[in-house]
Image (cartoon, rainbow, N blue to C red; front, side, top):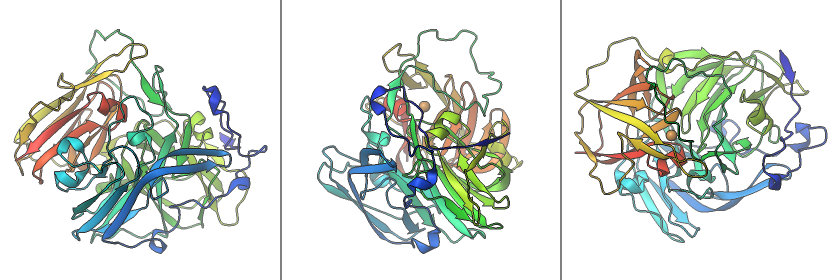
Length: 488
Ligand SMILES: [Cu+2]
């Protein structure tokens, strides 16, 4: 069924104070075209540099006309500037902090020393309020990386990754990026978050599947607060408010998607088209595949080529109807076509990391490290506490020691009912088993582990020093869901 979409007509909010005007009475997106930063052929925009400045300061974002919000960003914008570097060529990132609180810039997906990785737990010095600090490092590996704040937010939804402090970081390598006619960097975001006891609503596209890990007796205490949002954008524009992506029939368009949310797990579809997925978290996959729907846990990246062979005006957006009407999408417009952008609900199909992998048998690890994720329900109006192997993060506890170059297998054993996008700093891991299915060759730095399921990932640490592992949902991380390794 084809659904005509009149948008963005933001839904009435659960909060009265957020009464915002809709874009126009007719809901026409053409009334509201703004130049959209970051959308355009990359080649015309940037080339690799060695010196960068990031200024942390308040910014206002016009997500749509009459829908302006304020947050913290980099260089007066959110997303911040796209930082393009060359693999192996040393760079300096000068961070200036115009705010009143200490800050940290985490360089996500890079193999760099602890003192510049941007995590306080690893010993990276903070950027003092109204001060500055230089990050000097040699970027590697090549691929689509990103940068974002790594401060704690706890119960303050105006801090940490709830703000607009994020941006793409591209490390150019010697590899051939493939043939395409246009390249777009699209960061998915939600805004104006709030606490709620409601369970996370999902788009029901990606069922959890069998849960052999689920205990017979569940914790019956009421769950505590989670974070939700009702306003969405791709880069800094809500669906329909920015420039469409303009394409011609027959073009091959490379999309680099980043889920820059602190809270949301996201699906995306472009009706009438397929995504040819070539890289996950910036790392080329051994077995590129066509899919109809993308799944992006918090902090995950997907690079996919779309062949434009279905002329029209389409919505590239989330299958979640409320969220799409509230801004999560962007219009794809073929040359010579006009009219109301079309949306068609995609077929339901579970996301499967292993279709991008190889069937070969992986080398056995020297050691297996179980990481059992637990949740202590906080009850109504309070925060849940999160545990790894029964313990919430304790900064005084000695980190677990690992040996450089030794092959370890991490077992992400999710003994909670929530999906968790877990991230290992300063390393790339290889998925070796996903929900009971063996695989090889898919290299990532974040993986989404569904409720009561298990994923195994192997890695051989290359970098000495403290290495943080955590859930990339800000609230979960802040309330205990993290642990430290120390590589010797
Ligand atoms: Cu989590």
